[in-house]
Amino acid sequence: MDAAELKAMQSPLKDAYREDPARAIITLRARGALDDQSIACKVETGRALAVAGLHPATGGSGLELCSGDMLLEALVACAGVTLKAVATALEFRLGAATVEAEGDLDFRGTLGVAKDAPVGFRAIRLAFHLDTDEPQERIDALLKLTERYCVVFQTLNTKPQLSVSAER
Image (cartoon, rainbow, N blue to C red):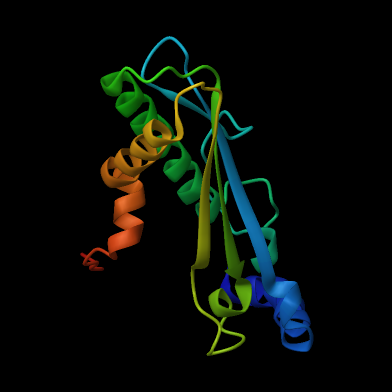
């Protein structure tokens, strides 16, 4: 794909987002389930091969993975594994459990349609659904430690120093 093809594909989307900014706000989601036999989280991707491409809201075909989806899937996987590890360490009685993450994106920012629209997620919500008879104090402790030790959560929460480089 060259620049002209990309512009032709995205131009109608940009026009639509200029006319109706609400159309550019898309909520992405990821979901996973904790493994009941080991410290693992099975993330539902629905794809066997991880091939990233443009999100349909930016002109993509929808056949490839969106990096925003992949970010949420990474958060779900990390949070699920961390929760399972913490639950195991605390001897927390945990039956079935699922993890969900969803985030709101305004694609006007990504496409350069509106300078006041952010590029990237403006909100991410992480939720655990736990089958447990543990008291609320133990559930609170489990969540506090999971939040503290989840690498992806903390990376997003603390805004790490980022850099970009290119080499020839």
